[in-house]
Length: 290
Image 1 (cartoon, rainbow, N blue to C red):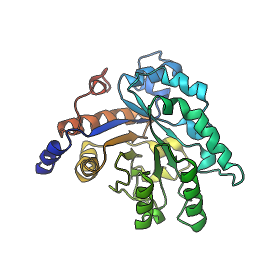
Image 2: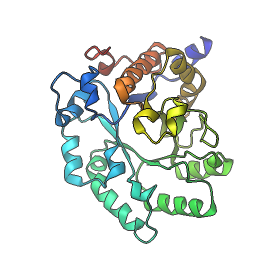
Image 3: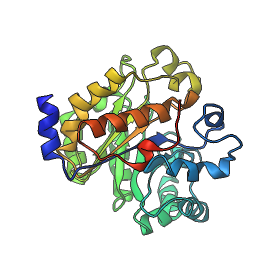
């Protein structure tokens, strides 16, 4: 309790935004997140009435195009923010002879969000097979060089990246190291509260479904409903301390099946407000969701 009171005094200007990874899920209509009959093209507008930020996930599957990104941007208020995943051809399916051209295409496609300052981060999410080998270290350094000038966040999933030199280099570059909540599987990157960028800390809640994580099914991997105690533990043990070391923070829930991500994100926002870290926001008191 004393810790929460101390943080309440010291974090008056901190800005923490909570949302979900993606927003266009047809099952969210059935789950009651969106009104009956809501079409995919209407979902972002409805989402923006509940949350102030989202992760754009389709940019991982395909390269963003400026006209499509501009259409997305026009569906939300001017203060709404986006984090966009870096395309898989730059993180998982890299062509060593073409990747720099892919970076140029990505820059062009995401430009509308940069121009309006609605891009909070570009998220480079690497797979579990991306270990800290010399080849991977060299590629990551070159990739970050090519992406310089954009707000960058990196998510590792191999525990070999837990190294002081990695944190120091990201700090030198002012690149955000993503903190994750995930099943405690062998070899998986652990939950940390390291802040490498004074402008931004970044948290992703993946759920703790250990049997489903490596099942090959995205739905099984992401199916998890956080308990209040688990969320409060994150606030007390990590988020409060991270918020003291960065100007802004974003928190996303990727456990989208059955609308769990929406329920958990809203609950985390309520708990953060109770702790005095954020103010009550419109998205916390939006249409009921059960």
